[in-house]
Image (cartoon, rainbow, N blue to C red; front, side, top):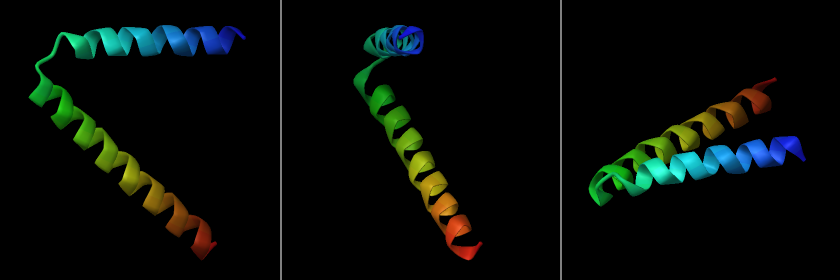
Length: 51
């Protein structure tokens, strides 16, 4: 339960920070993070298949 509270607190802080940024900056950051996550997932999937 404590982990859930901490995660929600961090999410609230992150969303509060994004709310003060201009929309194009937020969208650009979201795109970069999304691309990084897709690349990471593809590399992990490839690494598990080759083992």
